[in-house]
Amino acid sequence: MPGGGTRTFLETDHYEASLREAQIEAVIIPRGQFRARLTWAELHHLQMLRCEEDSPRAAYVRLAPRLAFVAFPTNSAPLPVWRGVELQAGDIVFHSRGERLHQLAPGSFVWSVIAIDPARLEHDGRALTGKSVTPPLEGQLLRPSRRDLSRLRRLHAQVCRLAETNSKMLSHPEVARAIEQDLIHVLVTCLTTVGARPDGFAARHHAAIMVRFEEILAGHLSQPSTIPEFCELIGVSDRTLRSCCAEFLGMSPIRYVLLRRLREVRSALRDGDPDTVNVAEVAHRFGFAQLGRFAGTYRAIFDETPAMTLQRSPGTRFTPF
Image 1: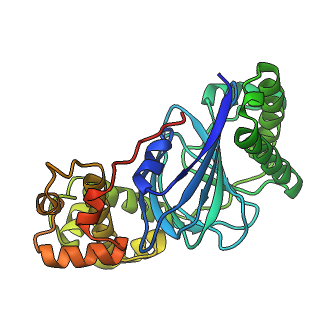
Image 2: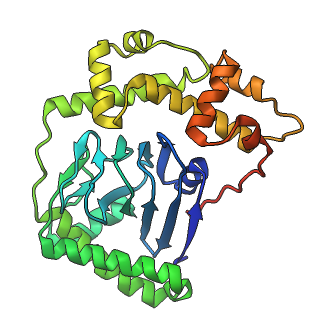
């Protein structure tokens, strides 16, 4: 049923949980507080998101394979880095089915997402252009005409504004259908009237290395593995992994692994019961053997002690889709 709404998040994992389809696997904040506002709208065949984030961050994203995704930044510089490539003004991203990629945002930014059933996109694309429109085998950066992109952004913004101020109007079937027809038309135009920016072998190879790094890391978050051990499991040199992490994440692999582990600890402490959860046990579970050093690093990153996190009330997970 068509509808929408908006919500503000102060915890990264609650924000991640709200993005079930355009799934963010992990948001990593190098330092400081996190704040994000998510607006969502659902029409008959389209789902839309407007994500406003106030903090520099890196993120690992896994998209649901059952949907086709198109994304684009809404505000101006500094533009984010997607899969190791810095976006240029006017770019949109046409994702592959089930794509896994990294995003790096050097500062606060706003990004917009449109999700549609691939079969519906193919049907509407053929009806409007006579050609089949399907997600690419690998994600592509496209640059539509300024006029078409401006129209796409304007329609997306209008829908999100309705979701924020008058979601009942979106739930009216005829209103939702009229808006959706305009959006699908301009979306198909943006996807079919331009070519893709070239993506060299090195960029694709580095993207594959980073996905493999995430796969290995997911199975070793509770183990104090060294970077040489990660490199051996991935099958790359230490220099290559460091170069890829700097390019895709804006930090070293050592720093990224540390922040991923701290993030897991924070989530377990914040959502745990203070009467039964022990800080030392949680720290050990995620590979922190030296508790004094762990506590100092935790406080430096999150501006509170692990015990303070444990005493806070658990947050409520929220899923708009």
